[in-house]
Length: 67
Length: 305
Image 1: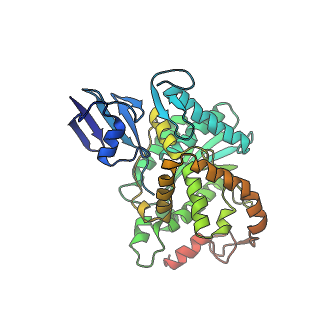
Image 2: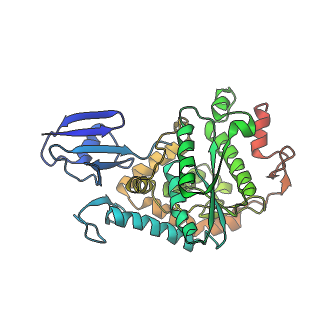
Image 3: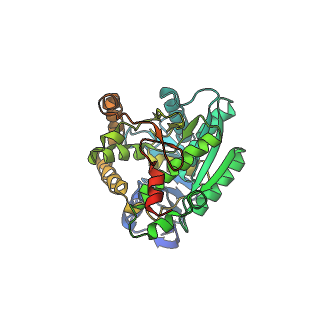
């Protein structure tokens, strides 16, 4: 069970490590704050509680930069 | 899980401060309605105004332009825009290009003014100097002067900036923490100077959290420049912002309560602490100034320009 992660220059296939693995779990794993990004699942905006499914394309868009 | 307003299952935001869930269309509508409500409540616009939008090409200024344009479409106001090119390599040009495209798309009068052309130096060059006072100090003062001049040249009656809820709360806390009671009297949705040469400034996005503005531009597919100013991390504002955001994680209404609290005491602060400035002219450039030289010209003198 895998998904595609797109974030800045990253475009890679990743394994879904557990059931009910959410975008919030992914953000925590990457050390990214949900306050600075918005998330898209297969091209559509979603909230961070969304569960990542097999074959999903998850895109994280950074909207807030420091300062 | 479904939209609290229309029941659509495709929810794009959960507002921690209220528990509200919204789909894309209801979210976009809620942002636009809230800005229009601020405009009305704070009396930011008068019929016939020509509003100069300070347009950097970033999310905040593009959102300001987009929503104020709805007033232009209803023939309530006219809009023009100015973009300041501070001269920051590998950063500013993308924003300038995006600003030009938005102005063309909406068919509004737009000018780009560079620090290099106006003052003969870029921000990058200032930062090479050993005795500089920090990037934000120069950028803020020069940008303000350029925008004020542009407003007069373009015949604008208001200047609209993209300050959002986070910016305003940071300014309240920064000025408080620094004991800068003078600056603390000058915040708010609408600020005007006694000097008639300074155009009234308005902040239509003052009650919208920064993240929601980011979500708005992505939801509306608006082209914006998402990037970090290379000098941003040098600022005290960055440190204050980090503390406030940490607090907001456990206390999601804290930004609104800080703003509301400030708004309640603002008039008392103004009455008690507002300074009476003398209204002379800068001996170098002729702009209104409380001192012999205005702030911009005193920096130029220090830089040997």
